[in-house]
Image (cartoon, rainbow, N blue to C red; front, side, top):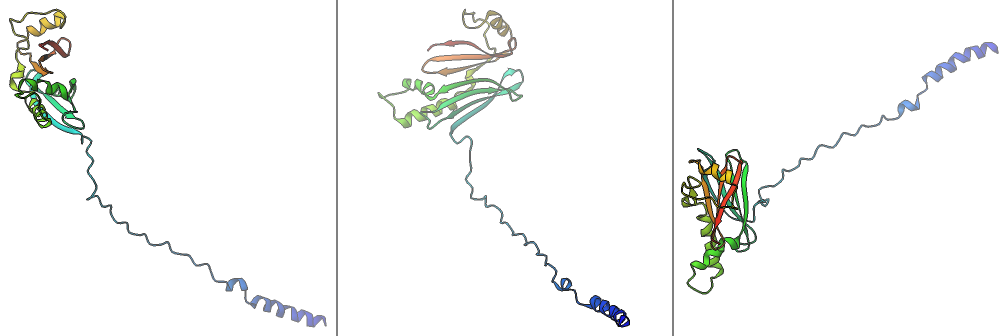
Length: 209
């Protein structure tokens, strides 16, 4: 009996080793491939609206003229912006050759229109006439006759309360200094110049008005 048991033991072990393993029969998990990238169509920018930061700019006049530095012209600009020509505001700037704004003044459209009264042959002007006059005023704003060299003529006398006397005297003795004169309102003529002594634009005075 003992012998029979000993003989049967190896047979049982052999059968156990040769029995199929249920864990091996399970299918291995399938790895899912990532989806193919979807091609993105390029943005259609051809029909995009153009955005203009200066969409309210109605008219711009520019002129280069020697002013703050002999032999090197500065850029004079008059730009009208606003909802309409009659309701706009003109910005007068002077930019030197290095790109620095050395002068800035705002002029309401009314200041450009005021002198129209001297041209009228009727009691009043139509909006179209008023607008046309403002545009003409802008076109002639930087006319040659508005620039003067020397800035102060030799025979011109100093007037108290306009500019410090040392600055005036320094400019007067500079034959190459340039002044610019422009009309504001009906009759006020303003005159400015670059002062090497003060290193800034100064007003030489106003006339009329």
